[in-house]
Length: 229
Image (tube, rainbow, N blue to C red; front, side, top):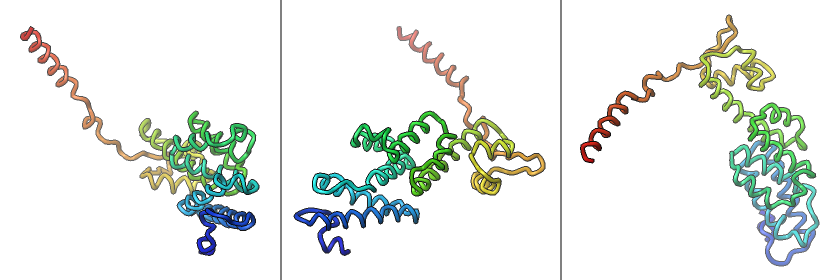
């Protein structure tokens, strides 16, 4: 409210440089805090408001040391939401040298490349290599998406899976987390055989293509065409 009353929430008109810096600092702290409390919509609002300071006031304010850490967080947020087109649009607006030289930008760039390659183990290891603690929140969100994708592939390919293999494939450090995940997906644990049995698949006959019927229809059409000719 104080920023609104002072006309600093959207910095238009004439303002003292120090006032603009204070306003920017407040919004940046709010953006970081929103990640700490896992409030992504609040982060979106803070980051959107900061664009006026990062872009419109770039020529009148000194660079903020928090700008690239927040831009990196925003890039990972776009990855977690599968907004790949927006991700690349943001990258194109950044100085080319930052893509590899700036650790806060390089981190999401690497994550995106590993996701496209299917190198999920590298994404998992990137959690420990995050340049800031706040990055781990979004990497954990990415891992949730990856785990569900892997689980869907396993369900489509097999009827069951050994528990040890499931824990390795799904990147779980302990069996308790594995059990919670598999229970949510309806996997049935067999503690004697140490395997998970997947939910019964839909009867293949219901999805079977009626090939004989299609062939018969095609032959009928061919005969009718011959009669027309």
